[in-house]
Length: 168
Image (cartoon, rainbow, N blue to C red; front, side):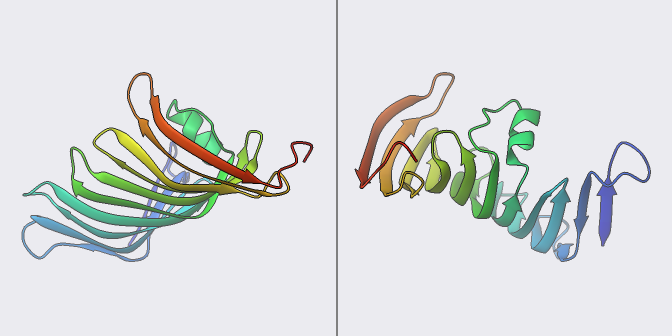
């Protein structure tokens, strides 16, 4: 299949193609197999399933988002990075409160430029399993826990730096 969405008939602002979306049981479970999504300069492949009866999902998204900052702005979110590449996002569990896993390489991060992030978000808490950067001439590594909400609360955050040079 090949589906394009846009503001005019010829506009392809969002394009969904390749792969398969199917069901064998009257849409109780929807299977998503390697469905490609292109939105402006961002590209992702979706794989997994959604159970519409039990309201559960297991979806993996692999993608490259060179215009991440534009998408963050579009959704009114803080622009903490310019782009993301080589990333994986997993959505697992109840549709109303899924566990979201994020493994991504960010670029254009203020003060650091590049940053690798491995985090999990569940029940309003972001657990940063590992964050790292080599942008300051050495190695910066960290872990942490952030309680999400109207005003996020950094519950715990540990950074360890070796051979850092702030001039870089």
